Image (cartoon, protein in one colour):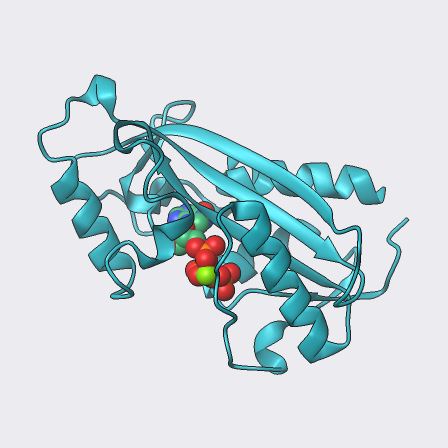
Length: 197
Ligand SMILES: O=P(O)(O)OP(=O)(O)OP(=O)(O)OC[C@H]1O[C@@H](n2cnc3c(O)ncnc32)[C@H](O)[C@@H]1O
Ligand SMILES: [Mg+2]
């Protein structure tokens, strides 16, 4: 059974919020941290998990509600796991299009066989801002980086992420399909099982 009726989602990313909301369904009343504060906490952790906890604590503090945060990113094999936790800031904060352009440029001479990558998602749930035992769930999604963007759905690096099990880019998947396959979907399935919802 869900241990609480209301939950704040600790993300300022509209794409993520939409996906998390769809995955949670009506198990719980969901609010967004943007209703309480526009200030985004600095993501100073060295891991997805630390950053997810940091964002969840911040959202719980400003809202007074239990909070769920998602820290995610793209880990490219050829780049030793970069951009990883720095995925959102890869092109120095210039946004998704610049991040994607930089990634394509960095990988321009890298052959298909060496373009393996995974999306990573860490979810952190805190019951209150000082919760000493956050619930952490992780998910990975394996794929390959394309040579040019494909598709209009999703957000972020989706147009560059080839999904072998569907023979399409992540941005060519329907939202329903992405929400069953993705790193976020896998982490959320674990979280739901953990919460018994
Ligand atoms: O921190 P919040 O406020 O949640 O929003 P954010 O966009 O800054 O989120 P992160 O710090 O977790 O950075 C995630 C990065 O990884 C990318 N990313 C994460 N999940 C993705 C997905 O499902 N599809 C495409 N890109 C994704 C996203 O575009 C960002 O560049
Ligand atoms: Mg962020």
